[in-house]
Amino acid sequence: MGEIDLTIVDMARDLLVTTIIIAGPILIVGLFVGVTVSLFQALTSIQEQTMTLVPKMLAVMVVTLLLLAPALQLLRDFTTRVLGQLVEFGLS
Image (cartoon, rainbow, N blue to C red; front, top):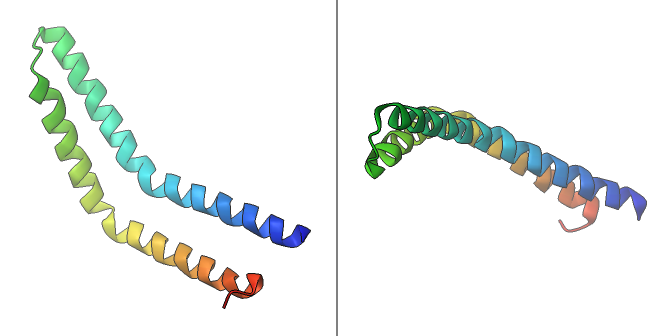
């Protein structure tokens, strides 16, 4: 039973690492654009709400589209690993 517990922990760790690898760059770009626009607004005293939302939304969309193919490949590899583990659990 201990070996199965370690396998579950390894799978959970793999899930978290895969999630961070896929979502990390998108979140970092959103954070960077948000801070940059907020700094610009503070320096110029412009307090327009859409000025924060639109650049951040566009930057996140562009990065998501650029990273879509590698993200799908990572998800495919993760799914293959998880389905391969089903044999070990006796669920196949």
